[in-house]
Image (cartoon, rainbow, N blue to C red; front, side, top):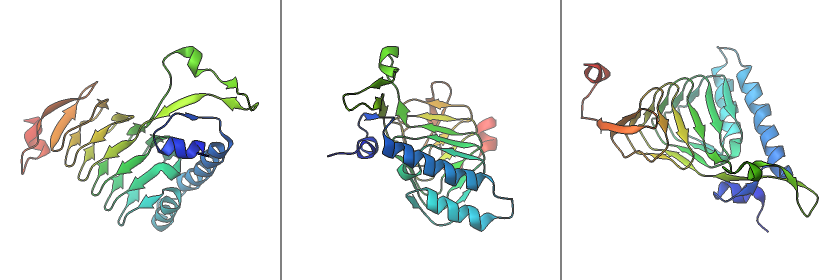
Amino acid sequence: MTTQFERMIAGLSFNRWDQDLAVRRLATRQLTHRFNLTTPEQDSLRVELVHELFVEVGKNIEVCPPLTVDYGDTVFIGDDVFINTNFTLVNSGKITIGDRVMIAPNVSLFSINHALDPELRKTYINQQGEREVIDYPAPITIGDDVWIGGHAVILAGVTVGNGSVVAAGAVVTKDVPAGVLVGGNPAKVIREIQAGETVREVRE
């Protein structure tokens, strides 16, 4: 029999109030609480906790507290990744972050959707006498060499292609091709990134 976690990680609808999922959320919150209480000089402890928190973590990773995560066991992170403060993962769906990714402060990844009909968002008691409400996960994939600017939001089901830049404040609702600059709400492709291009040239 397929568990609710297996359904969730596969991108299938699932019962948010499942007891096993509650246990997983609590374990994640306990680890993130410990992580967020670390002092500035405790770099090695933060790295240790990040490896304990997430399913897969590459080499040379730095994550700055505070950090908010729903499920540590749906997150996969590559090598040489820097994640700044206030990174928020509302992440029932799988989150994959590639190599050499830079994430600015206050970035949010939301890999979960709820029903639009308010009646379907209500909790009810199922035939087994358990609380049930159905949610709808979708994975988020961040490719290699991506830079995500501050306060950007990436929604469920989105893939950001290799080498792209998400501008500060962007709300990304659709897939982003490789090698482009996107910005706005909803985010749109502004243009392709040119070899050797710098931020100064963008501003000019």
